[in-house]
Amino acid sequence: MNGAHDLGGMHGFSPISQADIDQANIEEGKSRNFSSLWEEKVFAMTLACGMLGKWNLDQSRFARENVDPAHYLNSTYYEHWLHGLETLLQEKKLISKQELEQGKSNSMSSLPASLSAIKKEDVSAILKKGGSASLPSARPPR
Amino acid sequence: MGYEGRQGEHMEVVENTVGVHNLVVCTLCSCYPWPVLGLPPTWYKASSYRARAVSEPREVLKEFGVELSADVEVRVWDSTAEIRYLVLPQRPTGLDHLSEQQLATLVTRDSMIGVAVISQPSPDELR
Image (cartoon, rainbow over all chains, first blue to last red):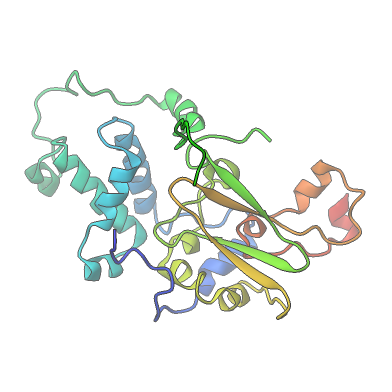
């Protein structure tokens, strides 16, 4: 993916926000992970929807990265996440464009049988398990 | 040490020494070793850090209050979707007698990303 997200070495950025650094030093280990409650919700929704099993992590990254470069550079980190989530939900037909725009579900029924939402008590175990990238190989690396 | 789980399935530790200082970044997004360090701070995810950590690490470190002498080599590790790097900070001199528990109280999250070093603790801190 040769997109705008490939920021390594890009010129023109300002120094790291001193407010962010100061927060990090003042409350060690309690520094801000999010700039607003809205961002926390996007983070949580993204993980929860990911746990529906309709896409994998690589697809989520692609959904975030496959945007107009000017738009990517002009939006914040969690705006990228929100865009990625909206894209995947529509692609997988879990939500319609209309529902997204109106902010209301059009569906009369509850979750279809093919989908199951994760329960709160299962989250820790799922995170602990992770998703290893290791694959068996008969040959040593070259 | 038994840490495992999402976003930390494959972690690699890089050691700071007298001659080498390591710094970790994810230029493409914000890959970070969640099981060990939790969620990344806001600055780690921001464009400025992602862009500049690989091209001007010493300037970035100065912004965090870390000034390294010219004879210290700086190595920057770009985390990937599969591999998460973690810095083993350098132990201040004279603390070889401390237990793992005592040492753990001195290590900071930022020192394990590489934007901070562990300074000589005061006698109070060692209790």
